[in-house]
Image (cartoon, rainbow, N blue to C red):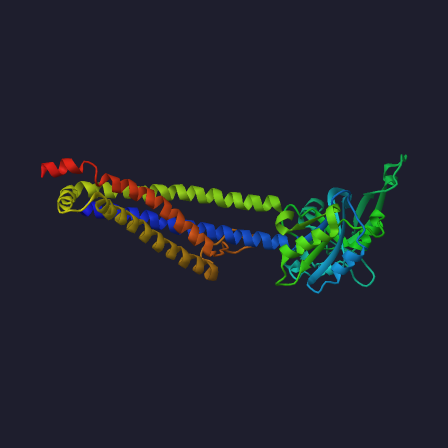
Length: 391
């Protein structure tokens, strides 16, 4: 009996640790997802309108103007962007120039992305550029040197066959004011006022896209659907998830991959219950036979062992989820586990609790426990008639 109790305790401990690990790992992935998406949201609008065909379109229409005046709109940014050659101190870099209108600066989180300098795009009489960290690292840009501007090269719209290749490009100079860092996808971008890019590209009124952010509480799904109905098939209207489809797919893939690994570990832990219940059945074979002789049917006998298996699993699961919850709360408030990197944006591992994860873990444990307990319960009545004859 002592050995059986020890094995049952080990089985319960396995379920406890597996359940706690699942809750903690899922919560950490939630935390990383929120952090990554919050960083992306600095440069990814809630709604983005682009032409379905071609690079640019004219935003000066009655509908787009009414959209700009909508009371629910927080910021309405006109964007004109293109691939360009950037030179600094005779060193070249191929990047993307993104010209933005004034409302782009309404984003209060922009300053949090700055590594050096400031997020300044325009003063009274001068345009400035804010560059990504990839550009700064490749060119060695010093944003504090006001006498060393960036040179931006863009192909002429009416380029022909010229003897000097440089005549095929429009060249403009602009002073860098700051360096931002978000993620590799954005860090090769140079952000400038849209008027600077209009002059560079020779686009007097067209834009590449419209980036719209709404005030809190707005129904973004409804807004997106309404815009699609109004502007027709000539444009695409994307929310943040659609703009970063690969990112969301990657995050979900990693999340479910880790979940499946830990679930496999949990299956091994729960199926240890079969071993402990099998030993209990062997030890209680005479008691089972006597109980059967007193009138207990096979369903009742099976139910006893099935209930014991479920009790071990459910108890371990509930205690494990509770300990996982306690750890996650402590991690949120005190940052017990550090990232271990001095240059990391995060000091400690981020955690975000979602009650759906607790439900998922509980249902996973219950499903596996039903199978394991069912197998053990079937063993309890195996050879029951032979035992009764021996007695």
